[in-house]
Every structure is written in structure tokens, then in C-alpha cells.
Length: 540
Image (cartoon, rainbow, N blue to C red):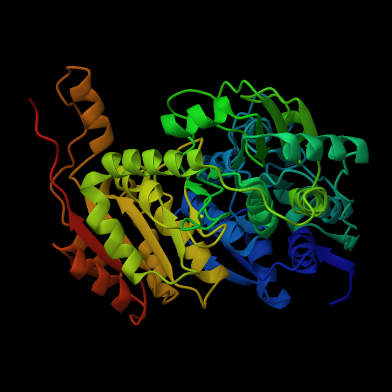
């Protein structure tokens, strides 16, 4: 296909621009206002995955982006479809995931944010609403501007902190024919910290008696260098949830995803230097309260606005984490003549105390975590939800082996993430094992996406811990001395429900059965839902 388009629909310009940027799969639902986009997808070799709900489509695009490490694309129609996708876009914003949402907007003859005419799918201000949810809402009004704005979105994804972008094209422009030149912009180089700032940071790290490293999702590209730096400094590494796997969970210097644990917090606060790489140190990772370090704070982040978020930085290095940490490794090794520092006894003491707390928090799930680990490949992708079995059980206690292999909706904390994000992961990495973990409450938010997984014959396992309702909120009510209200699930059979949506489904009663069911799921021609019944906490 030529990059110079002549007398084509605005919808075809959209698709040609996506193809030029390497997009080969999208998720979405066609509607009256976006048919020209869907009509052009096949001509440009882009596969379309039909979701059952726009929220599921955008979650799947997010799961794809987190797994493939490149933007995921969802295409929806105007009005309610955009608003259906908004929750997933807000979650992608919270987790810095590069999701591109494309939709129609109202005709150019209708003023954006005007008083309204009752036009089909007209909202009060779709542009304004999405501009407050996504990193940006782009509104091209010519054929050339469509190509330019999609190029701008992909440039943004590659050049700064990757957060979702919404591109909305007036529906009359999608139908109108015109000309455009497809643009693929050169990605601008990441900022580079000054040599003096880098040297100062290295001096402090080498001179420090105690260094603790905290890493988040922004450290994923720097994984190998983070481990090398930690080994040189004898410094333990704790991760945020999005940073899980940057250092293997069984590495001698790993603290796991336990930045919240009081022994880890105490070690951070007492350290001579706290090195933060690609993390905002959010409340979702530090739910007992923020760090209050008494030593120096060095921070590495692509986003200069992170300098004083949750912790005040003494040295801020803005740029690509992989490049900066690699330079640090080289410089620290030179200062130490290639001889790593000795790992101090306090490191293993902190690890043991954090391990014990995690095991206590996740006690009821420990046998199930072990059973899952028995069935997981080293490079398995794990899609999870905001469920007790996940944040008390799995995240705190499993052994991560790869960066960017566990997907969890942190920060914004949505429900319904597991099934659609597993679909996105399975299509991004068809040769990798994909396992989802959810509670029954979260599953029901997007359970119909099992039909999408069945239609695509994706051999993924979805493990559902069923406590018959919203167990976390029920427990909070009990802890407050209140009677549980509206947290019990109505009678339902999750096995029958999953089977009705085209999945293989079964209940298991023992961890051994769970291991076997997850292993068997890989040979099934579609999703397998494995229900683990759980007892509720008894009222006192």
C-alpha cells in the first residue's frame, strides 16, 4: 500500500496509519458511526478481534500492550461505546500502559461541548471527558490531520511515559473522501542526564554503607542492569506490583513485591541511599503509608514530574532507565575495580521478616500458590484482578521469574481485568502459557469475554477463587462492626456460566487438582475456567 492516499475515506486513513505503525491486531465492536474503519482493516492486513463489550476490548488492548511491550489498539463507536471503554482507559493511565482508543466523534457541524441536538450517540462533551481520562484526546478535522494525530500518538507512546491516548474522528469525516500522506515520525531521543549528575549519583551509591533499591514498571527495560547494579552494591531490591520480575523472586537480593512490609519500610528509611527506578511509590504498593527516608534519595525516571512524588529526591536523573542504569553499572564497577560489595547480614534479616509477613497475610492461599507455581512455565504470562486471592495470596508469595509477566490493575484498582487482559496477552504471545487469576466478583464484570476467547480458540486457564461475593468488602464491613450489606452473590453456577460461553469449566477441591487442571488447559481448544470454592470468614 502506498503512503500517499488519494480519494479515500477518513476511515481508510485511520487504518492505513495504524498499519504504517506496525499494528496487526485490534479489538473492538463495530457501530453505525465507525463502519468505514472496520471496512478497511482487512485490506491492510489488520486482524480484528470482536469483543463483547467495549470495556473488555480496551482491557484486551491493555493486556496486549503490557505483554508485547508495544501499543494495543481498541476501536469503538461513539458515545456510550467510548464511555464503556473509559474505565479501561483510566486503568491504563494509572499503570502507564500505551493503549490507543479510536472512535468517531460527532459531525463537524455540531459544536464540541455544545448544548446538544439529540444526535445519535451524542454526549455532553465526549472530547472533554476523555481528555480528562486519557493522557490526551486528539480531534483531527481533516484527512491529513487523521494521519498526523495517529502519528503523534505513536510518537508520544515511544518518547515519554507511555499512557493511553484517545483519537476521535468526526463521523462525517470518516465517511468523506479525501487525500492524505501517511506519516511515521522519527522517535525523539530520550532525555539524557548530565554527566555530573550521573557521577554524583554513582559517588553516593559507592560511598553508602546501606543501599536499598525500589523499582517499578519503568524499570522493566533495565531489568538486567538493575540486577547487575544490585549485585555490585550488595543492595536488596524491592519491587512495586508493576515491577514484579525486574529481579527474579528467588534472587538472593530480592525482597519481592513487598515494599509495603514494615521490615522493608524500616530498611528503606534507615538506608544511606534509597535508589528509586521507574516507580511513583504509590499508595497501592505502600498501603501502610509512604516511605520517610533519612538518607539520600536518588531517582531515575522518564517523567521529570516524578522528582518529588511521594518521596522528595535529592538527585533526579531523567531519561531512559535502561541506558542510565547501564551507565551506572559500568561506573560503579570501575570504582569498585570489579569487586562487588559484601552483602550485609541485615539484608537476609529483612528478607526473612518480609517473607514471614507475606506468608501470614496469604496463609489460606499458600497451598494454591504453590500449586499454581507447579503448573507455570518460567515465561508464563499471568493476568490478575483486584481480588484477595491475588493481592494477599499470589502477588505476595509467588516467585516471579520474568519482568512484565504479571498484569495487575494497580492504582485505579478496577475489577474485571483478568479475562480480557489474558486475551490480549494470549494474542500478543501465542507461544507463551497464559493464566488468569480472579475472584468471582471481578470475573462477573467481564465474564462474557470468555466467548471471545472461545471464538479465538485461546488455550488459556482462568482460575477463579469463589467466595460467593465481594469478600474483601464484606471483611471490611465486619471489621467496622457493621452487618454485611450487598456483598453476597446471588445464587449462580460459575461452571455452567463459563460452559455456556464456550469455555471448558470445572471445579477443583485440592491444590493437586488445580495443578493438573492448569496443565491440561494448555491442550484445550479454548479457555478453561477452574473454580476453586472458598469459605467466607465467619461473623463473630
